[in-house]
Each structure stands twice: as C-alpha cells, then as structure tokens.
Length: 204
Image (tube, rainbow, N blue to C red; front, side, top):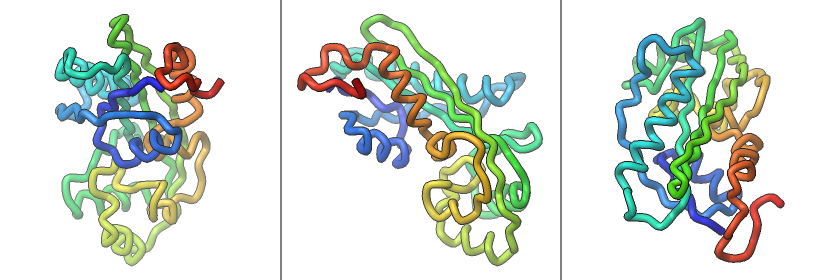
C-alpha cells in the first residue's frame, strides 16, 4: 500500500492511521498556527490545514518517495471565537469555564496533496458539541490529567475529556481530529487504491 506523509505530530491522527493500517511517515509542519484575520472559522481551519500540508511539501521536496502528503487541523469555536491550544493551565481553565454547559462547534479540515500531479483536495467537517456543566473540582481534576496540553479547546474527546462531553451532533472522530468516513472517502476519490505496492486495496 502507498505510503502517506503525515504533516502532523498529533498522536491521535497517528493512532487513526495505524487503526486503518495505513503506512505513514510523520513530518511536522512546524508553522505558526495563528488563524489569519478576516476568515470564517471554517475558512481558518481549511487555511491552516492547507498551510501545514504545503509547508511539508516544500520541506521534503524529493527526499521522500511518497506520492501523498496529508495535513489536517481541528479548531473549536464558541460564540464565534476560535479557541486554540491553551498556552498554560490558567488559559485552559478559562477555556473550560467558557465551554462548560454550552454548545460549541468543532471543525476539522483535511488536505490531501498529490505530489506527482501537484494537486490538492481540501475538505472540512463541522460538528456541534455540548459540554456538560462542570464544577470547579471537575475542571481541576481534568486539568490535573494534563490532557489539555496541545488540544484545541483544552480537552480531548477520545481520552478522559470524553467525561466532560454530554452530546455530539456529528462525527466523534472528527471532534477527535480525523473524520474517518470523510477521510476514507477522500483517499478513494483521489485514487489512493491505485498502484498499491503490496497488491492490496484500501476500502474496496
């Protein structure tokens, strides 16, 4: 099966790739992830995913034989404000206090770059998430887990952060960082099955 360059350090996305049996190499983009001004939240997520992907494409040039580079970005949106990754515990506390008892949106954008044809496919998935009402003790407990570090909105659904979430409208895997159905569809639509080196096809 063809190898994919994953433009991300995210352990969650790496775990999903392993779950799907996809061979991959991680090449972090290492870009400034500050959203550009004037963009809608969905546009901001797609722009960040695109910038990550193209930054890795420029970085590797012909150093890798892979035909594919994949990048993604997940953002949390509350009342029109984009909540990124908390810089410290105090900021994570403030984010969780704002999110507690409210509905917010999670947008995960994906970009698949075909190195051979120099083409990109960009898609995004939006979900509505309702966080439970949280006591100060519950917020402190969650902050003590350390899961908030490096997580948009200061929580991780797929880990103990799932205890904080009351309801999800949409794809749980999208909230966790990679919408699996849409990702698999993207690969198939772009001909990922073709010329697989081991003779196997991905999701026939």
